[in-house]
Image 1 (tube, rainbow, N blue to C red):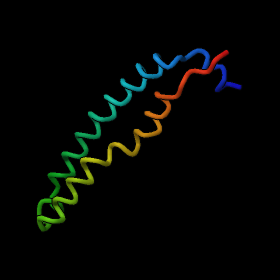
Image 2 (cartoon, rainbow, N blue to C red; image 1 turned 90 degrees about the vertical axis):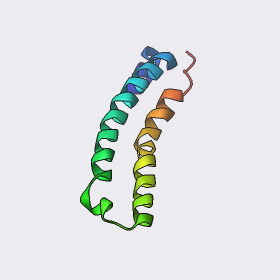
Image 3 (cartoon, rainbow, N blue to C red; image 1 turned 30 degrees about the vertical axis):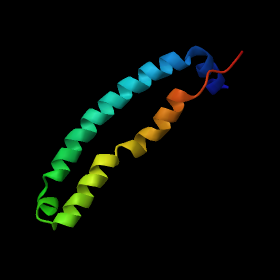
Image 4 (cartoon, rainbow, N blue to C red; image 1 turned 135 degrees about the horizontal axis):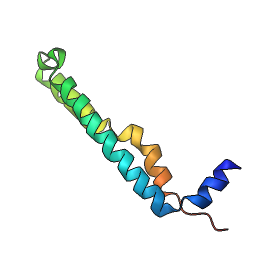
Length: 80
């Protein structure tokens, strides 16, 4: 019941605005954490192949937690 109520109060445009702000904040904090991990001693002292794999994982890992948010933002509006 609450979900239906929120759907009517929050059109797709509002969800995109809120989702965009949340994504921006998340990516800023994630970038700081990823930079710290990339400069950490274990990754810096690892062989080149392990370093490359670590950078690829750190570079792409931010997408996984944001996928539910993106799906929520793109959900079509309900017709009354």
